[in-house]
Image 1 (cartoon, rainbow, N blue to C red):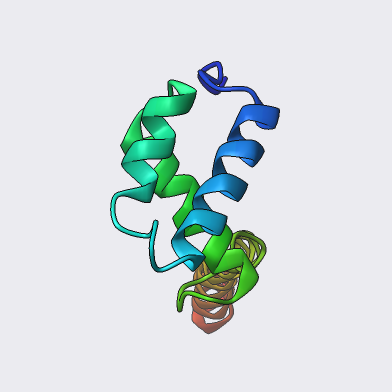
Image 2: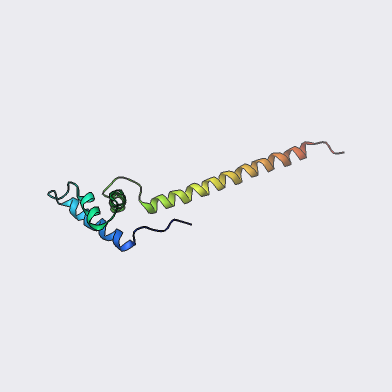
Length: 105
């Protein structure tokens, strides 16, 4: 069970939007995240993480978006499962091949 959220979604979206807007303006870009975090009562690192994620999702920052990360994780799980099934089939094939090579009693 995931931990309860400290900040609600509305506050998260509002803070992210304010920080992104402030960072676009060169006059207010310096210290924008810390200033907005203090105004809204949010931890600055939490806001920095939200802004980073929003920039990644918008394609402004080179990184893997959350939808791509979910797809990669699902493909990796499927790959592990298929490798395991393949190993089981190889073991079974070698077992039955050994049974066929035994001389009859």
